[in-house]
Length: 458
Image (cartoon, rainbow, N blue to C red; front, top):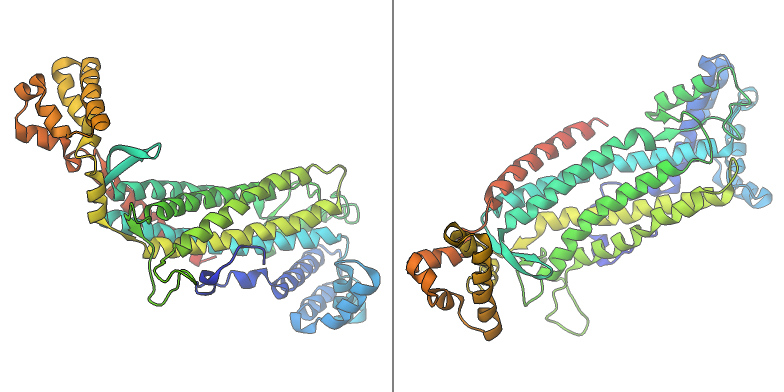
């Protein structure tokens, strides 16, 4: 496995995803496609019906002699032919003649790999639904938890934590839409033979390919070229974009768990050890794995681009690379998504600390609010200049914002003390934070339910 693991990896329910990467599943998928091919060819009269029936009966994992397959592999040095030879031996002699008829190795291997990717993809879509459900709960429960909005790493104007979460919900909904929309381009099979021209079965080739796609729940390639890899790169790009959202959440959690900020905590299980030498350590175990695995994932689409331009109608160096990086992308994404699901389900926001932090500047975060109130009397430009002067004096000299506001004759004449205190209260200047959080919480919950129902049937 090529993902980056730690002790946390051992405690997460992988939803059966990791088993889908196993050699056993790979061989089962090869058998599935050899069976589907024979069935489709028999339907078109290209091979005998009895041959297709016998191949289907023989093409079971328990009938494959893996020791013999390994011996042949060492003898002839081909990655797929040994599998075919033991499958032929598992069939009646006459029917065995029609195994892998009219196609080439990559037709089965690439189609099979993308079939396996599709199975994993369905698990990912369900995980997106779970994450959306978690985020919807988080947004609703914290829609009015006032905190500092931050830009460029500094306090901006106040927001609520529910609003922050609503941003993630919006991104995940768009991520789901991207992932679903790409299915028709990615999950394609090829049965075009050596160079994709259906040379060995020109009369029935396209029909057979379409039927194999139907039998396996896939799509047929319009041009079944072994030299097309952009659909694989597109899928890895989509995985990277999905991981990027998870990465953003993890970075936010990672930084705001700092003792100096302490606005959020990862869920903590009693007995978890953070350090071999510092007994007090409670480290962000989920977030760090999201960050590390996401960073590695980002490099893979670029690597695929270098390889996808190999010339001519096929190149084994490109197949070898894509076999590796596509599987690696799935392994990395699995770790990222599983951690993100648990993180969004178990993280603990600290409302009191958020409110404490947003008041650290004693109302200075609300300069825009005061400026907008003054603008009704002085105009925007003059109000901005006045507030800038007072804000800089407050920040640079370490003075009290409220005191400096009331010391200004124009402000003290126009506004009462209570009005000024209300203007600088962060809770009174959160815009539509609560409304946006409520809207996205409902939208996320609805989408989560739709995802659950749709992919349960897959």
